[in-house]
Image (cartoon, rainbow, N blue to C red; front, side, top):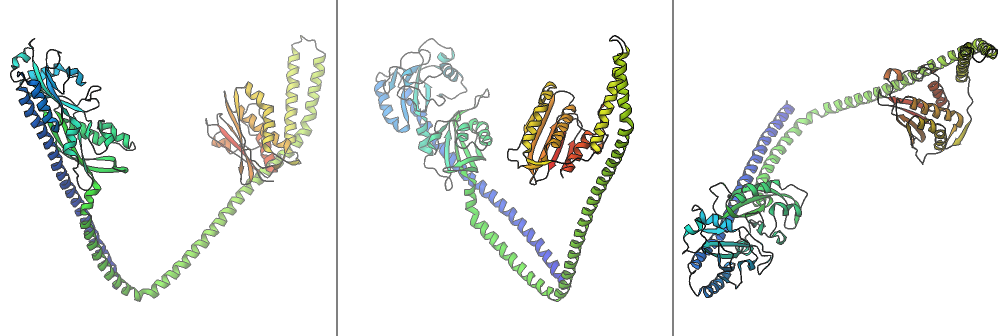
Length: 613
């Protein structure tokens, strides 16, 4: 009774502990999710702050550009341009000036001094400029894509061009495509330095960092210097090509480049010097230069991203989780210890019974083991008995064949010789054009064929004395192949040899084993209805030698495989059915084994095993 109570208590404690464990795991997961969301929210605040700082930077430049454009008709504009350039250098303005929208003339004025707008190495789309200032729904400032000039003073520098109409130019001149002079004022801003100015030094968590991409998805700022100016959708794959970046690339194209704000996660392949697959939390916020086109085009914007490994978030809650699991472990330990003590007490009275049960169990196991061994002996004996019975039946069949062959040879051979002789005598007495000569030829030929068959039967039944000599079976195979290769080539059959060069020498009767090989190769090519292949291979097996003859013929049915080595069983029209029986007897005389495996339309494989000797 005490034992039942202890077991019931153990089950109850296990159930309660399981429920507590599941609740603790669920609470831990919810805690991790909540902390991750809060961490990403903090990252979003940082990303938004960087984006707002960049936005404010360009807001200041818009005001400065509007003020600069208002001096467009002053005679001292070049002097004022130099003054503006000196002030705005700290705001990453690399060049400023005026040009004509509808004429490719030289700059009206520029600082630093340049002869023409083209000397900057920048080519603006004048048609895009005209469309922007024609559409009253768009902002009064035009922002270009990020441009990297190939020549000029700004070569290899990522820049952004800000353009506005001079205030004294009426917008109708642009709308009506006036042939008059339409001056534009512009600032050339260092895009990378502007992004770096507000993103550099910002850290999320322990090692999280920001990055900034332009409207094409190219990095303007990144802590990895070799990422600058490169496509964000391909540069990550170059760093670690072992993983897929489809998720971050999809987030970039569907959200970041569309001017959206939010949080997400993605899989990456590194973090600073650690090269491995990891999950990162991401917050992103846009820097909008021009709102989305009313016709549906995406806004021109940059996007600020802030990313940190998810493991850093777990590091924040690790002490709390550790304390939680420590309390749970102590609770489980106390309960289980008490239950274990109770269970041990309940087992004391049952020790004698347990010992007896174990003794009976051991006796039963020994009995089962003894019974299993006896069963295996019976099975082996049964197999040996079946094999001996098959050999006895085959021996009796051979004895009967021998007796019949002896009787047939005595009773038939002499009359056949007389028939053949008389037929030849009569044929010699006939003229060459006598039509009966052909009939006599048939009689003579059939008599010789029957005589040959009787000789085969006699050879099959006559005891053979083996003349074993030690030799290399590979040499015998090569010698045999030379005898049949010409016939195989004429039949369109390819013969392949795969001979193990490390075969040991063994004792065998050379003449009889040659007969085995010739008959097996001949049977193989006769089984091929058209062009095909015969493969002969050798290998070691249990210190002996295994010879395999494989063909690509029509195969043999399972029913025929059971009788294939029986005397006088044949599937050929002109066969005697003794070929494979003779092979079987020769292999048996060598204390070897011969087996065959075949499937209809899959070819056949004969295997001859010769024991070591």
